[in-house]
Length: 281
Figure 1 (cartoon, helix red, strand yellow):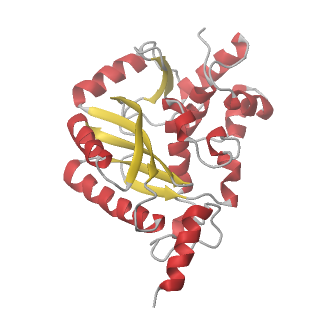
Figure 2 (cartoon, one colour):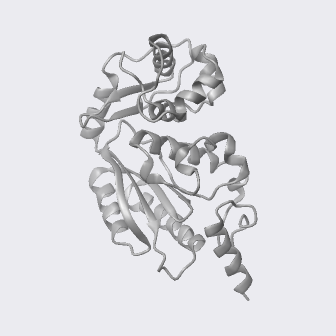
Figure 3 (cartoon, one colour):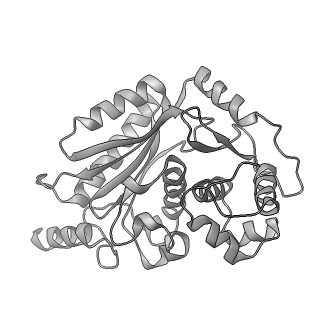
């Protein structure tokens, strides 16, 4: 059995929408084992019984792991398939490869990239994020491109999903936007299914996020999206999409002025938001 990577396990759990405790229970493993495996970058150090348990449990929930043609590793959720209980049947061999081909034929495409806020932009970061949320909602309506953008410490991580030509067109426009700098693509390939059917922006970090992202190396001492693999980037964005719907973010209807500036741990954005509030008449 080919080894799984820590990134695949984390991304698979995000797709299945279960926490580490539930995954440990279903696999018959300890919680500490799951935490240790998810912290590993690259192939995990685990015996065949542990690997088999993980693959079988994820399979019952419609999550499959596969190797990409470029030598990378991936994770996907079968399109149109509801998550099944641990007692359900697994996916047939080769299902992941078939869904990728089907996605290519249907035109479903996913592009993940990261960038940096241009320090020369005259507008504060919280206003930029408000503009990104509005323009993203418009793109969903006019171009059928959806996804999410996560912003922290002046860095952006985003995924775009939709018809291939439209996704590429949107990314091309973003790459020419002077509010962004140092753009870099993490993944640009067909997707088994659209994982983000809406558009949203999730920003900042809060004390309440620690349980979900406290062990994420990319969020230690700032934000380092360049360290993320495609699977781990997708997993982190999935987690942030879920956190966007919980307190305190779920009550954030506008960032201008931002009501969360006083409790947000992203001091770069929060300081600018607080300063702009003080200067408003």
